[in-house]
Length: 90
Image 1 (cartoon, rainbow, N blue to C red):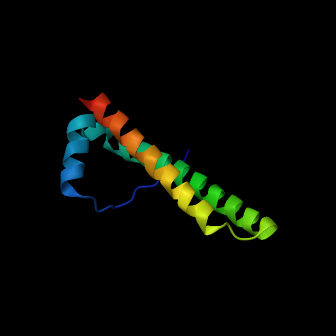
Image 2: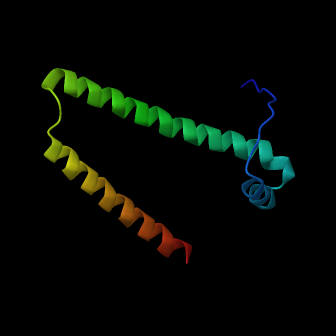
């Protein structure tokens, strides 16, 4: 895969932590992997948005009650995930 050199401005504290964890030699590789992971997530969210738009075109708008229910499910899932991650970190 072709590589391209770029200049970036990053948060100093986060960059310092990344350097201490991966070392200076691995900095580009770590940033490259982080960008790849972020792109995967953004592609997925874009696909979900397209799917929801298609459903709305085919079946009409989603009822407000359904949107509220879905928001609660996501909030509960996020809270459970955060709790699991904090337990694993301790």
